[in-house]
Length: 279
Image 1 (tube, helix red, strand yellow):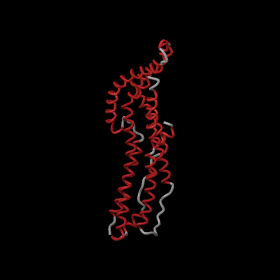
Image 2: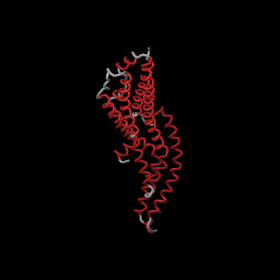
Image 3: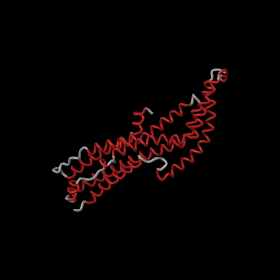
Image 4: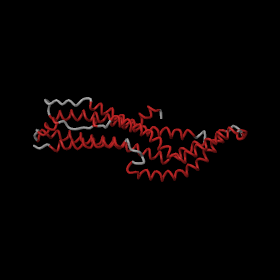
């Protein structure tokens, strides 16, 4: 009996995984300005311009809050150093609102430069690619109809799980870009908080969180490199004396375990970045 559809089903799932892995690797070196041809970035720039008007309004509000909340008495307003300190906060906040988008893109460029440099020195993620061993393909092809029935369930479940893991992994990387876009769009509102000493913690928290999102790319890249080394350190041992169903189940179990490790690390990249860099 021709059982090629069973192997084709698994090969299709492995192809999906390998393609998403290569797409993930290429996305790590892209910038928000070039992602998806820059269409999304143009929209964000427009939104950022609208948020700037709100930011300028909040600038005055935060400046007034900072002055009156930190003043112990009316005499403080007569001290030049007191007014100078608050004026510096006002100027910094004004610059943040006006040039904040450029500042955020520079932060991303620095973080992405680290990613590109490390990725270039390490090569690709070919070690994390998955292909079916010839022994498994041959053994499946020699099965009869009744013997192949258990493999239907095994391969269908395995293929479905592999496909889901591939899309979860790539969606995490796409989600990082969308978070960067949100930070860029709302940056004038957050950076306006630097106008007041008592509200500046909002802007500091915003910048720290943004750096953490940018560094998620480095964590994901490092996870891929480590996983490639882990996956290529040893091939799956196949017991050719065991039943074909057992061989396929053992092979898929080992492959899925490795995939779960990488997807788990990619999903946890935001938490790892926060723990490593204290952001």
